Length: 261
Image (cartoon, rainbow, N blue to C red):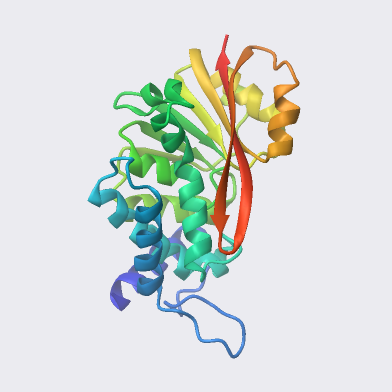
């Protein structure tokens, strides 16, 4: 496994030209021994599998999440991918949150999304960062995904990780995108890292087919604010609150869904 870590390090370093290949283990604070990435990966996979029972996810999906967690543990600190890359519960939280639209579709709260993630469908993920939700949903569905991330190191991480996970029917776009970057060919546009809401809806409006959906992972406050607004070119399709455990904390979340008019 050490050779594999070093190989991945070399790939990411060639992409970025900036990340050192000298260590295959995750960095850590002084005096604290880093956890074994493989142990982190196995624990994350177990936590995700326990939470997602009933979704019909394959063994291959959980194997992918194990490897994904390993790579996050190895590279998380070096590339500032997540706040706590050594914490399996925190990594599992991000994956489980990314999967929440599938769970809500299964319970009938977001049934309209089911068709958007089938084979032959096009999904665009904006501000993909470390791969939440794009890499996770791509691992769990048969749709073609395009992940947009303008930061070079994170684009490199996404490219290498997608290859490691066997997600060959996935595109990583490493440029800043605007509405002019797209034609209306997508069935679903999503983001979990909302920056400029106007830009998100503008890009979604340009990229979506008629009747396609724009999906935002939001805080309850953001969801309430959006529910009270009229977004040009869209009809509000759903705003569904939910809660997740993040270690000892309970986090309130929401999915907001718009349909392109």
